[in-house]
Image (cartoon, rainbow, N blue to C red; front, side):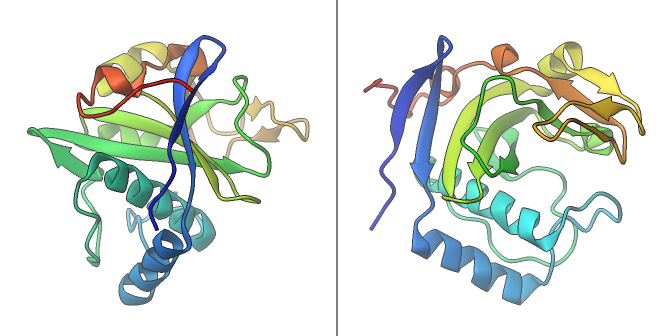
Length: 192
C-alpha cells in the first residue's frame, strides 16, 4: 500500500507530510544490508540510524514524484540524490523526536556545499512516529545567499538548550524555503 500524502499550511507556507510505509522502511533496510553504509565522504557521514532515515526520506520523495528509487551502490553518491530534466537534486533530511516546528533550523554541514547539486529539497522526520515533512526547496545559489555560516564550536540553540557544532554548518530558516509545487509541475498542491 502506498503513502497517503497531505498538504497543509504552516505559518503561511505549504508543506507536504506523510508517514513512511513498512515497505519503504524495508527497502531501506535491504539497501543497507547490500551497501553497508551511505555517505562515504570520509567525514560527517552521519550515524547509520541517521543515514537510514535520510534514505527513507529520499525513497518517499522519489516515490511521490514517480521517479525510480535509488539503486544500491557502494562508494560516494556524488552529492546528489536524483536528476530530473538535467537538474541535480539533493534531499536533505533532519530528524527529531517531535513533529517539525517552524523555529527548527534548516541546515547541513558546510563540507557538502561543494558537491555538484543544483537544488536542495529540505525535509524533516519525527523519529518516534516516522512522520515525514517535506518543507520546501532552495537552489544552491539561494541557499548560499540566505544561509548563515556557523563555525565549528559555536553553540546553536536546540530544545535541550544548545550544543556546540562539531563542524561548520550553514543554516537557513523555514521562512526562507520555497514551496515544492513551484518546482515540480507534477506535484498536486491541494491544501486540505
